[in-house]
Every structure is written in C-alpha cells, then in structure tokens.
Length: 239
Image (tube, rainbow, N blue to C red):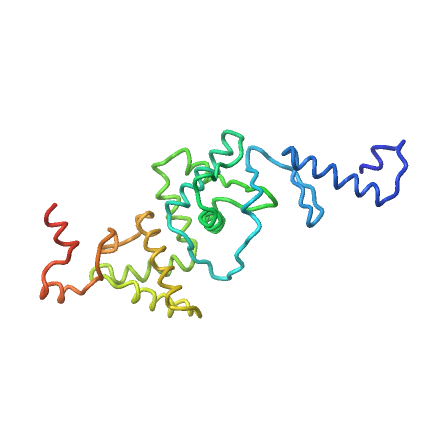
C-alpha cells in the first residue's frame, strides 16, 4: 500500500518494508494506531474504548483454572485508575501502586471481564464504565463477574455449608483442594482461600459467620458454649 501510494519513488521490497515498520512505530508512539512489532501487525486505536498501557500487558497466565491472586481493594483502585485515564484521555497513573499489585490486578480485571488486553492497550468493557460512574452498583457488578469464575463459585458453595459453625482457613483450603482436584501446596490453596474470603465479603456473598472479619479460629457452637464467648462475640455483645 505504501509503495502504490508513492508511485514516483523507486525502492526494493525490503526498503518499502523498512519504511512501513518505521511509519508504523511513529503512528504507535503518537497514539494514532497500535503497532505490534513482534507480529508485524498495525491495528486501529479507538480512544473512546481503549486505554494505552505499555508496561503491564505482556505477562499472561495460561492456567486452565483461574484463581484470584489479589484482594479486592487493589482491583477496584486499578479499575478506577484505568477508567479515569479513559475519561480524561491521559496515561494511567500507577505511581503509588506497587508493580506486583498492578500486574495481579490487571490479570484479575481481565479474568473478571472488565478489560481485555491487547498489544500495548486495554479494551474497556461497558460494565467498567458503569462500575466507575455508579458506585452503588459496584458490589453487584463485582459479584456477578466473580461468580463466573469456577474456583470462586466453588468456594462460595463451600462456605455456604459452614455458615452457621464456621471453618478454619486450613479446613476450607482442604475442601477446595479436594473439590477442584488441585495439585499444589496446601499453603498456596490457603492463600487462595484468604483472597476469596475477602472477595466474598466485598461481593456480599459471604454468608453467616463469614460475613464479617473476625479474630481467632472458628469453633463449633458446642465448644463455644463450654469455653465462653470468643473475642468476636464479646465485641458484638459490647456493641
């Protein structure tokens, strides 16, 4: 196309290819297009739907079964930064967020369907716009998105069966590992459980005793009656 648009210039095919790569890199730098130098593809950039991001889009998880890797608050913070950049047509300000948190949050947002990663850009889903503009809908949007993840959906089913008596992190991890047939260390699954418990609370999906943050291990009702109220129960009675 470049050669045909310049009929008075004579050059070899290799030279025209070089010109094309240089011009494509210029277009990409000026945010007029998206140039994937690795695959040699130039695509259109849509400012109203995409946000430029050149640093945190390369690493991708290939797990067949997706697990939450970071708690809710960094995810919300990252999504608001991304949508803010879209609204104001500026670069994303990551200055006060640790690099590891950004990477994990972007991965989570993609798995939750809030964004789609492309070469040096993010495609922003319509529910992300709604999430940013309507704070009262954030819990509902997050809950609906999280429940599409098999691992989280399974976890919510597990804590539902223990909503009256409670269960330790180790017990929940053991059941989750068994139900999903996971082949990883117990400590890894326990970390997943802690994160998913945080997700379930922010999504208003944590039932019974799991609905509030508490100190100390869960004990059965019988043991609690024999040993007196727990710290959590004392706090509630004081209130």
